[in-house]
Image (cartoon, rainbow, N blue to C red; front, side, top):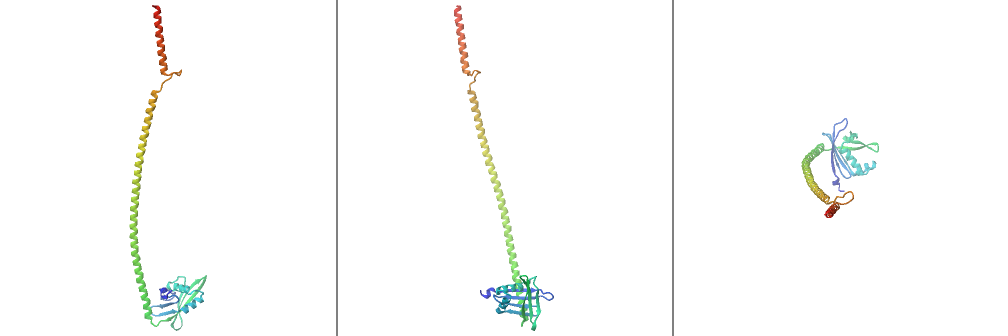
Length: 249
């Protein structure tokens, strides 16, 4: 991988117990790093070479990439559980240190920072980086605010559209249900009319059938048979009376 593609920049305002805060600007490469430190008046630099980083990584039994990642983590952002130090060393140098835990053991890393030959350049470089970072952050905030505004507007539009669709759905369901009830009631009325008509027809047929039915006496003879018997008796009685009159004459 090309080194420039792995280059990263950080700037940390480091609070140290019992001392004024310092600013640490770091540039992180694939296998090495550079840091610049300033307290506002004086400045120091540490340009760690590939050989130095590789040697430290071997001492701590770590790959170079892991060593650099951990160093960037502690010098790019102040870790609350770490104890930082920036103490005096020989010939105006400073010793930058920080602690961390590994497998339950508290360890400390140290790097020597040499005095800078151009305090103004280092300090201005740190300030420029902070200003650019602040501008980028402000632009990001503005862009995110705009994006949030658009998202909010879109969300409100979606909510309004959803409410409209829900209302239309409810109205459609109500209209469909009312139509269904109307059709159902019409079919029920038609079925009732057909049933009433059928019941009326059956009643007429039963009445006509009753009219056509012959009555029988206790002996089981029908009305016709009884009529024929009465007529026969009358004829016999008339014939007998005729014969009696003839005899008297």
